[in-house]
Length: 314
Image (cartoon, rainbow, N blue to C red; front, side):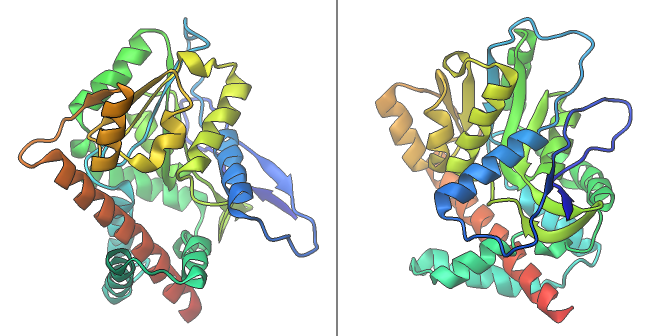
């Protein structure tokens, strides 16, 4: 069976973003965490949208990598996607609220069932099973206009533009679905994006992920794979994030910068002498970081768990 991880259909800009593999008929072997992270990173790099610009970048070995949630935009992109899908009847209010409560409980109490975690991971994008890539991309365009565009941090956008003006390429690196990440990158005029890759067959989603969510170590794997493909010198590259979870990504480049950092990343950045930029106002930065991280994580789990309920019903 031939499975395409991701394709791009938008007109007006040529991209290189198609990756197709042949899946053997036998039962797939069970992958450990490192193997899932590596697969997720390699899939994200392979599916990364690269704009075919009229003018090639003058600095071909330098680049910048930006996390999205609370780094490029205020809040969690998955929240706006989930809200947009809810409005379009992908799942019910009861499903997502029930799932959100369950995820919040696990985060507050600090006890997680390994089977529950595995189930949440495997069903993280099952809510789009049976829908087409084209359908999600169309919804993503609408969701960006409805809830994301006005939440972009002007300061971070200016930093991204600075790299572009210096002749470097700029990629988003996020756990959000690659389709949404690519829309954000395109709307901001960036080079491209790497995000969580959902498997689809003949343009229809299967509801399974390729490897794992593009999170933590998987982001570093994605950057590593992209650097090999594009001939980047990571010692000349920059990375921006708000989260301590992104240390693997931040630590592999020559210039790591903390943007709107959570408490742990702020402390680490200060200890390492990294630059810190905080564009939040009206609340303490450390507290805001914790609240946003908890909300984003809870909602991500809510989408996953709600999706699992929906999938079982159908």
